[in-house]
Each structure stands twice: as structure tokens, then as C-alpha cells.
Image (cartoon, rainbow, N blue to C red; front, side, top):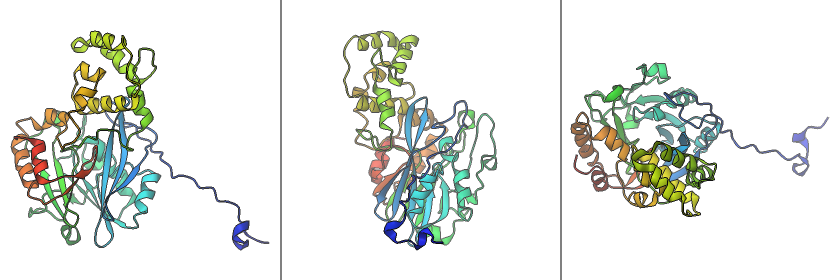
Length: 365
């Protein structure tokens, strides 16, 4: 009896190729789950040729989206160092496997929920890898221990120059770490800790939330149809953009009713994708943007692209606090001593950046 393997190649039936699954059920988060709930698309990019890679998934809350980047470094021994892993979907794991390296270290660079939520599930895929997490992890409304969140760290992600650090030699040879760790916590017990990671061979700085670089136009990290829905805002549209304006009109926040009525009384631009991108950025970066900026976002948005900057929501809620500023100043000055030429943050674009641009982003601290 013949088998398929014994047949000539041209006689074998065609093999059906299936794209790796993007499914990932994620229903946790308080008070609202941080979507997408059932599946997450991963966009892979090469940041520094042959050495540094980005794996980006979307975060979504009530239709407003942000990107979240996992930065992966290839060492001279072809090991992979994973900073801020994203959800371990089949698609992401297959993309990671295509690098043909061994995951040896997994790093959690901050305490924010959207980043630590995936460390446990990801690390279970690589049980031999060492896990390092910034100290002072927290949870709300119950301040659960990291192990209760699935984070079984082998050590704290702290300053590599500290005598308390326990990094192995293979890690120290290529990486340095500098930790922002305010001595006091903020409201709800939030600890504003963040670890900056410097890869010496590529002069690359990896960060979580400290600074962002907003692109002028939407990148492939974002679902275009969702952005069009945010930008489609005619009075008769059945879209997220129309709902945002309708709610603004209903609440009359800072005179929003008159602003929306005036906007709806005239034809709007047909470029719903760009308008959706600009509106989405403002709603994700600002803590309560002005109604005029929500309705017609271009004027406010145009001030953002073209420079590294601290996200306004981060500056308002975290960095302006007197509990954070002294330690922030020390950290900013300390990180600026590294000779980095490329910056890979968790959000928005990665790209060229320098110590002087880093310090300028924070302004006077």
C-alpha cells in the first residue's frame, strides 16, 4: 500500500497553510477589561538589523487603542532577551521562533497592569528563562503579591551597578539597567517604578512608559478600520466617532454641546482614517482633552509629532507629583549618561534618539 510520502512530489496533494492563531482570551482588568478580549494581532519589525526586534499588539479600551511593544534583543551567543512581553498568542510565539534563538531572560520594565499582565503566561512558555521584574509591583483593588498574578521572578530588575543586583555575567556583558524607584507611592498605592534597559552593542535604549514619539500618520500597528470608526463622526453615522461626539454633546462638558452642534452643521473632511488617528491619539494621551480638540483634533494633534516627549497623561498623573520628581530628576540624569542612539519605548514609534533628546523630553524636572 503506497503512502503520500512515497508518491512523486508533483503527485502529493496540496498542503493547506493555516495562519497561526491570534486567539487569546483576556477578560481581566478592573474596572474594565483591557481589550481586545478574544484575539490579538502581532506586528513584527526589525528595529536594529539582526539584533533588535519589536513585536507590537494593540491595547483597546472602549474602542480607543494604543500599541504595546515587546522589544527583543539578540545577544552575541544568539540568546534572546525579552523586555515587556505581550500576549503569547500562537502568532507571536511563531514570530519569535523565527528568530532562531533561545529565550534566556524575560524582563518586566514597569508596574503598570497592561505590561505585567502577560509576563506570567509568557514565562510559562519558556520555563528555563530567568524572569526579572521591577520591584514594588502592585495591584488594585486588592494589592496582590506578584506570584498571585503569575509573576515568579528570579530577581529584581534594579540598577546593574548596584551591589544588590544578581544578574549573571552573560547578561551584564551586554546590558545595563537603571531603575526609577520613588520612595513614596501615589494614589491607590501605585508605584511609579520603571527600568531603563541599555543594550551596549547596538546603543539601544528600551523603555516602558517614560517617553513617546507620536507619528504623524497611523502605522501598521493599528487596525485601520477601527481608526476609521473613531474618525467617522457625521450625525447620522453609526460609529464610535459619532458616539464620542454624541456623549460630549449630551454631557455638555466645557460647552461641548455648542461645539458639536456647530461641527455637525457643516460637512466634515472625508479622511476619516487620519481624523480617527488624531482623535485616538489625543484621547489616549491626554487626561480629558478639551472638547474642541476632540471634535476637530488636527490643530492640537499637529503639535505632537516630530519629537520625543513625556506623554501628557503620564506627566499629569505621575511625574508632576512631588513624591516622584526628586527621584525622576536623578533617573533622567543617570540615563542620559548612556551613549544610546536608538530608543524603543513600549508605546507609539521606536526610532533614533539621543541623550540630549531624552533630557529635553522631560524639560526642567
